[in-house]
Structure formats: C-alpha cells, structure tokens
Amino acid sequence: MTQLQSGQRIDVPPRSGATIRFDGQDAARVALAAISPDGRVTAFAEVSAGEWFLSAFEEAGERYDIVAYITDDRHGGFVNSAYPAKVEIAGTAYDFPAPVQQLAAVILGEVYLKDGKRRLKVSNEGFTFGIDAYLRAKQLSSITIPHRNRPSPLPGGGPSPNERNRPNPTPGSALASGSGVIVGPDLVVTNAHVIEGGSTFQLGRTRSTLTPITVDEGHDLALLQGSVTGTPLPIRLPNPLWLGESIMASGYPLMDVLGADLKVTMGNVSGLTGKSGDVSRFQFTAPIASGSSGGAIIDEYGNLVGITSASLAHESMRERGSISENVNFGIRASLVFEMAAAAGMPLPSIASLNNGSRRDAVDRLRHAVISIIVIA
Image (cartoon, rainbow, N blue to C red; front, side, top):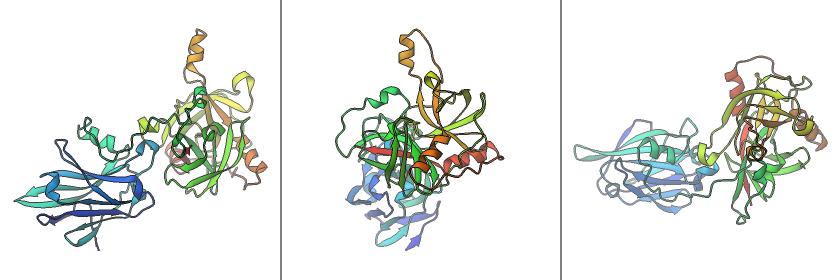
C-alpha cells in the first residue's frame, strides 16, 4: 500500500477503472462523483457501504474532479470521519491523505490528460459547507448531484416558540437538530425542547448515541450521556452576571442553510431576568437562529454563564404593534450545575477562567459545543 501525498501525480493506464473505499465510522454517509468543469457529472457505482467503483477513467471525460461528499450534509457531519480512504487502480492500491480541516466535501483528485496520457493529481482540498459549496465555487449550481439525500429543511431545535409545532415524521427519520454543551466527561446539556418528541439522539459529528439522563421541562434543560470527545466548559459560580456584560453565543443554527460548522456571535447581557421577571433566565443580544437552542453562552474568558433557550417571537410582537430585535433568552448556568447534582452525575467544574484572549475563548467553544440530531 502506497501513501499518497497532496500534489502527487500518478499515471492512469488506459481503460483502467478505480475502486475507492472508505473504512471510517461515517463511511456509509459518503458518496463519490466525477465532476467536469463544464458540469458533466458521472456517478461512481456503489458496491457496498463505503465502497465505490468507476469502470473506466475515460468514462468521465478528459478532465474532472473526483469528489467525495457527505450525502446528507444538511444534518451535519464531515467526510473526515469516513477516513481512512483507499483507491485501487490497475491492481495497485494507494492510501489517500486525510483532510486536515473539517470538510463535508473533499476533492480526492484531479484527473487530466497530458501528452496523450491520463494522470491523477492527488488533492486534499474541500469545503466545510459540503457539495453545494463546491458547486458554487465551480459555478455549477444548476447541476444535479447523484446519491444526494435532500431531506426537507430541519425544523430543528431553534429558538422560536413555534418550533414545538413539529410535523408528524416518519419513524426513524430526522426530526430536528439543535446544539449541546459538554459540561463533564461524556455529559452534555441541551434544552428540553430540543429533544422533545424524539426517540433517538445522536451526536451530529460522529452519529454516536446520546442517552437522556434527566429532563427538567420547567427550566427547559436536559442532560444527556454518551461517547463525546471534547473539553467541558467550566461553569461560572458564584460570580453573578452583570447588566451590559459582554458575552458570546455559540451553536449550530440553520444547518441546512448555513452548514454544519460552529457559529459564534457577540452581544451583551441586556436584561437580568426572563419573561415576567423569571430569575432563572436572562436576556442577551447576540444573534441566534433556529438550531441555536442548547448552545453555550460564555463570558469573555470562556466560562459558561448560560444555555441558549429562546427568542422573543417577532410575529406575536408585530401583532401587538411592536418591534423586537435581538431579544433573546438564556438559562442561567447555575441551574445546569444544580441539575447535574440532582441527577447524581459528576459535578461540572466551577474553576473559573480569568484570563485569555477572545480567540482562546472561541477555541474553547470549538471543543465544547456540539450539534445534536433528533431522530423520530
């Protein structure tokens, strides 16, 4: 087995084909296609889960990219977790290099003719936002991608009060998506309304199962347990929030539109209570959207101060002749601590961080905030 390197070129014998196999955890979510600059698309044939076959390199034209992509990227996930990837050409086996970045579509190689001979140039570049981003970059947005699973946009765990009115889904189908925060070893907190109506819950990044431990509908919190890789965020206790304090909100909003990478927004604490003076919540101004629910709200150093819960409903305010902008609500992180204690779980850390840059704080979010897929 030969390990290929990015930029390496290999000769392709005439009338030879290729078998490409992914052996990682998410191999079944990846498909392959050959896409030419003029928009010609040649689908690889699926041999088995994770294994794809092209009968002859000539079949796809003179010049094209071989692209591997997550077929259901509207539900999150990256091709990275499908690696290792191997290709066999004319009896010779090679290992493709794994992407360094988190990518939902990867150009495995560029096939071209030179001096009458066909060659494959190994690539390792791709797109975090998936095959749609590849098509936009190549100005090929009107073509159809094979094997693509195009589910309806996820209603998804977002902050609107109307998100509880979900349609009756087919059992086993994706019902919603939301966000969660790692607060302890294999322990995740999210909103109760994110997992409402679901039968199975999966970590968006790896599709590993998350099991609910306890649900507090009154405070809109839920604790889940599962195999989760990351670094828990410390909870800021006992220092209270102060009015006007700068915060960052993070989560996975509108994954069907914005992609499956983490989003972070800036704002401040705009009110110390929730609706009708609810002291378990506070108001903040950092923009959020559907799917942000359950995400982390942190202070300037990366301490967890709240869990994103909801936005003031714009439609109902307009009906009253009012306008609302960036009036959002978070659940105080102290309740997460109390909930873990009541459930008999290891207590989240309260060793507050008191220094570091904004970049450091965002890096902590990258290792602590996850996406959650809710299955009917």
